[in-house]
Image (cartoon, rainbow, N blue to C red):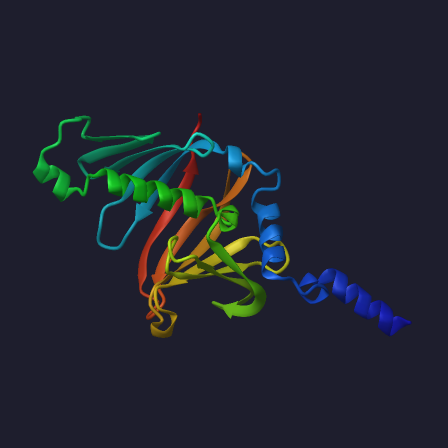
Length: 237
């Protein structure tokens, strides 16, 4: 009886052994942690991201995201340059230092075009919409959940691929085995070459009911070279 009681208590206290989760089940538990009230489909917020990179000045970005209406704006300031992208419906507006009229030379120098505006929209919506965005069409969540050690901590690891029209990269998401908080993600262009990057997530910034990583530090997979850090701050509406 004592042995049975000990085993039962161990299973309750350590859920990693108490259940053999599938990939979709792990994803649901992670979403329950990050978006417990299901706010993502109606998410509307303004937030600031400061990017710190070696041997370069800080870049400050203010992102305005309206998921249900598909609206997006991005204000970027680095040194003395300030530019803004705004996407609404089929309209795309770009300004440089407050001016709509931008010379072709400046457009090329600062990569100012509507294709890049859409890229930024997809980028920020994806990264700050994780793990909820892993339920989007075209996402292939593997059934098998691995227990993997990454940087001296054991995680529940979820492998994700995409339909070819969505993307070619292979992603791994690492979740705390007790809370199911997302603490690392990693992608490869070609996993056999160990290319791509991994991103370490620290602290939590809650924005409109969603728990987002406050600090994201980026590194190359191949040699652990540090690339930079993003720091998230909520802004008052």
